[in-house]
Image 1 (spheres, rainbow, N blue to C red):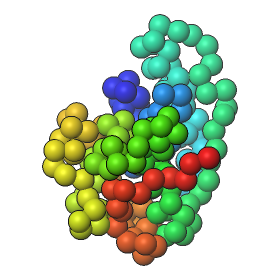
Image 2: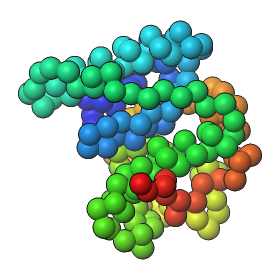
Image 3: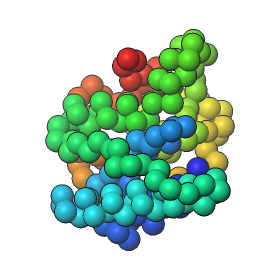
Image 4: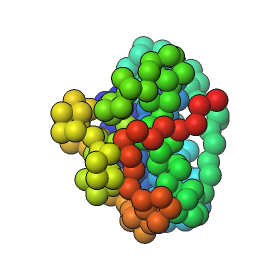
Length: 174
């Protein structure tokens, strides 16, 4: 986690701003911004290379990690952005539900390997936001990402499509 977080923070110098992410056991989800498609393509190439290097270094392994297995989609509408936020920030919950953990046990759970705990308070719907205890448990210091959104769509535009997030939201399973 720390190795990947460091790479995500350094990505800004390469022209890509990783605004939100979720690190799972065998994959990573990112929401990133760049100045144009070319900058994002170059930045993502650098990012995947550095993440693979750091994961290999920390785990004492070598060889290909991602094997060019990634999906990139340009988010263009508030609805797409909101769905992507739910998917990325709540992805750990989806995997736990697939393993048989009940939704009730996950209601107040915040994924400690995502940026969900660092969302501003107004990103959460009143009455459906994480408790301070849940946030404190998920946070392990300053936001490991470090990139504030620059675009309207990533910053606040997504709220036009369903409003602030509810802690009970989960990406579709299956």
